[in-house]
Length: 294
Image 1: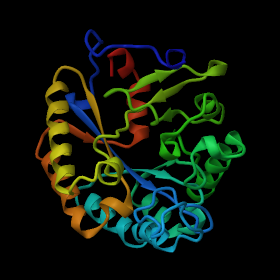
Image 2: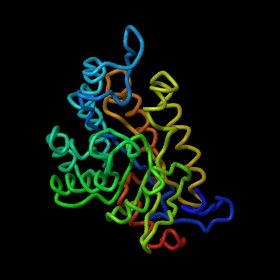
Image 3: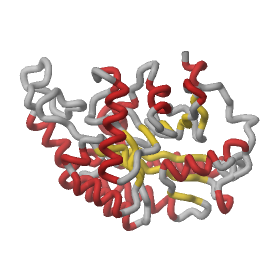
Image 4: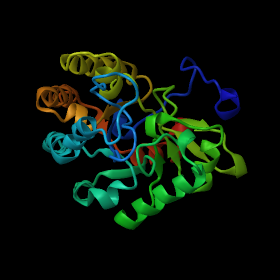
């Protein structure tokens, strides 16, 4: 089924892609901004129930752990990115526009991009009506920002068999669920439409790093810098995209955030690097980079 969505195109032998100014790497910083309802099971608990079994509802400690990210962690991450003139792309639960409007307003004021991330933090295979969920996400973001999102990152990166077709039908132009390349790739969708897979990451991403692999915060810096160094070297021959995945309740805590800043400082010491939003990467690709002529 995967091959019906996307062709296999090995990196070896591809036509070289060229970024403006002969830059080597486009760094794509994604901040995941989500709403976790208190009246439903928590999407990603940090604290297990003391007696085992399913998590309680309401799950106050785990909800509050995430809420810290919205109250404090987001603003700590934003201060770091602002200091280094990094415009992020916000993977946004649409409901955040109403529940945390200050977060959305600050993102827009900083020139950050908003891309769809579901209505609340619930994967698409669990919603009653997937198309209605995509439409409502788009509507909420359009209402808050004045324009619809061009990009999409599914909650948990989860899709159904129909998701790419539905996204394209609703006007979404790029999707970050397909973490299979260092360059944009075409997804095959119905109706003669176009949907581009923009690189995202499960490697330089604080969620699997800290919540699944249980790594110390220093590992983020080691992994980010070594990832960048290889992509920078390879980018001399053909441009690469380096995504960085962040969550306010993870990277935004005091003992981790310095390693985000150190990683950005390392990248900033190199010439020929762009910090781009998803739409900037998409526009570069659609303007001809996909044919090697950007």
